[in-house]
Length: 136
Image (cartoon, rainbow, N blue to C red; front, top):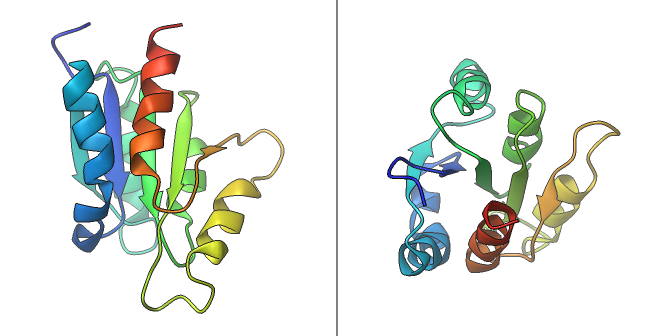
């Protein structure tokens, strides 16, 4: 694989970092380089757009976005790139639906804004899918 990062992992809050460890471990085990960023679709939308718009020129080939509550991050990223985007719905103590709200928000993208979706809190599966996309 390439020496530079091929996968970008993006979360909306620093508190989501730990819950995305399954993805980083899977990528580490496969020897796939990645970068990890914190940018919020609601608090820093310009930074999210810039990240997505420049991902390809930085050498990224797949983006993984972890999101809970309103779960807007994967869709916001997909709106600004043609790279594959994988959404990881995350449980939140503030959610009344235990992650189902995030799952539905990520899975229900409008036509033309595709986002692959894995199970709730399934960051490891997101990385496994990213690896399969890279190996195609």
